[in-house]
Length: 89
Image (cartoon, rainbow, N blue to C red; front, side):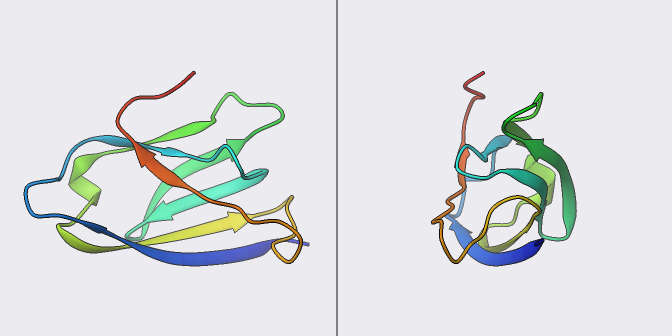
């Protein structure tokens, strides 16, 4: 059953930079940062395992993230996402 997860993260002053959202613990779905649709990730089929996050959608201070997950059951899994400087694949 599809589910939505919402969270917040903080970027320090002077820390804005192009980044990638790592979705390695997620299944299939869409990610949004500050209302901007980053795109679709799909771990089993790809090609997107990390989603590009332009610095222009980030804010110094508090940022919102929303994950719309179609495959995982959040009650039995502990998904995590993180911002990374470079894609790993």
